[in-house]
Image (tube, rainbow, N blue to C red; front, side):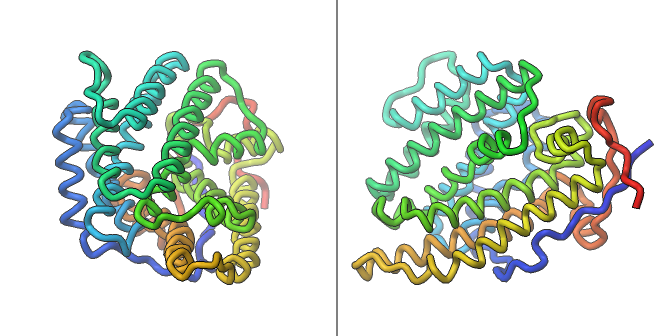
Length: 344
């Protein structure tokens, strides 16, 4: 029998509104056509992929950038999810092979990819070659480092899946901060900004960025839970906390909402301190303000895309956002998980 659960409204107090880039339709269509040219999926899988509208995610996440940088944003969102779809069905060895390919493609964007290699390599190479056209040296290094960590984390996720390993909550969050792909996404936003390391690595900026990343994790795991419950995918904080703390589904959702609120509250404490930082250069300070705006915008962008695309709720996103009720059907989790609802 399906479980009916109510999704907490974690973003009701977030003051940043929904914004979308005015070039969304044009640039998103270009990126989607570029991706389709690789024939990375079967026709049926491509149609399902298109319904997710990853160009919308980019256009919500980068609402104020020019067309060139928006195209980079659209391309990386498409690339993330191609890599995700390919590695979801691979063991650790196969995932390591693909991870090595996408790391090498970013390190060597001018070198033709080997014959017979997975198409993910050429998709990555073309994405990064285009991105480099207007990227600053500091941003290039930060993106390359973030990209390598992201790829390595997906290998760890595959190893967990292969070995049937279930991490503790804190251990899971430490890995999830990389598998979610937030760090490369932040690096894309600063490609043209030329921010020095003293800015992006400032302790307050790093803590603020972690608050944003954690909110993205909690919201993504919340809004993708219905989809992942159906397949038994346990790379999600909800089944992990259910197992670790012996919580029923609704109790785990309340826990998630509380953890999200803690990150949001900490963000609000940090925000005036971080926004007041100055780095001795008007040009750097102006670029820093743009970077902060990007970070603050991400939680709302992620929430809006999750409901507006077909990724998690198909055509029912608007209804689910309004009513906040979903049914859990499918494989679910092992008997050791207390999947029943708690007695209220």
